[in-house]
Length: 300
Image (cartoon, rainbow, N blue to C red; front, side, top):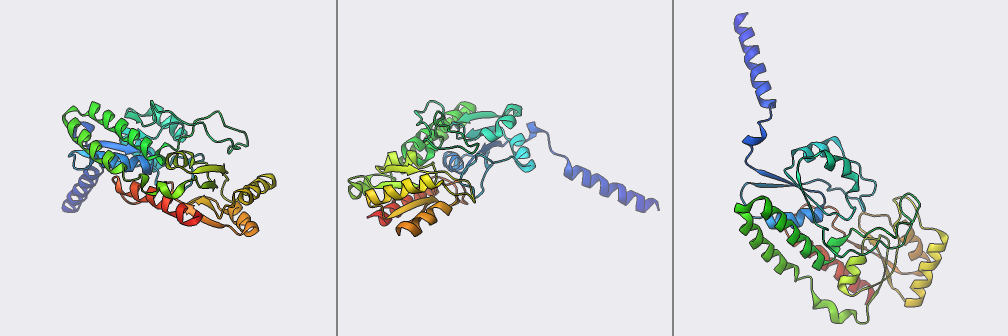
C-alpha cells in the first residue's frame, strides 16, 4: 500500500513539474511576435542567423482583410509571451488594441514616419465611408517594404545592442534583394495598364509598379456590389478595353464573376501575402513578381 502511494506521489510530482513554466528570467531567448505574414517575412529576414531570437506569427489565416478578425485564446497566450511585438501599423491591427494595451512587450510600428496614402473611397464594413483613413497596405510597395525593414532593424538594434550589427547586416542584404522587384517589366507597361480590383489593398502596389488603378471595390464574403457599381465597372471595362479584372486570392469573387459573364473579361487572382508557410525575403519577392507577371499576361 505504501509502495503504491509513493508511486502516486512521484507521478503527481513529475506531472506538476512538467506543467510549471520556468520563470521569465530563465528564458534566454528574445520572443518576437509578428502580427501579419508580410511583417513576419521581413522580421525573419532580419533575424536570420541571429542566435537567441525566436520569431512567431500571430495571424496566418486565409482572409482577405483583418477588419473583422477576433483574437482567440491561443492568440492571447502568444501575445502574453512576446517580448517584442512587430506590427504593420496604420490601423491594420485595430483588432488587437486592447491586447496591446495590456501587454508589457516592446512594440515596433512599421508604419511610423511613413507617407501614407488615404484609403480609397468606398463603403466600409459598417456601411459608412472611410475615405479620411489611411491605407495600411504599405507592404505591397517594395520601396515601402524596405522602409518597414529598416524600421524593424532599428527597433531590434535598439533593444539588443550586442546584436545590432547583425540586424544591420541582414537589413542591407534584404534591401538589396528587394531591388529585384524592379523595372525589368517597365517597358511592357507603357502606357500604364488599367487595373480594376475587387479588394482595396492594391493602391500602393499599382502606384509602385506603374499600373493605373481605375476602380477598387472591397466586398465582404458572400455579398456583391450594388447595381450602380456593377454598371460603372462594366462601363470602365468597355471604355478602356480591359481584358481582365483582378481579385485577391483569399477574397470574394462574386461580383467579379458576374461582371465577367456580362463582359467576357477574365478574372485573375493577385496575392496580398495574407498567409503563407515560408520565411525570409524570398516569399515576398516571389509573390510581388508573380503578381506583376499575372497582370502582364492578362492585359497584354
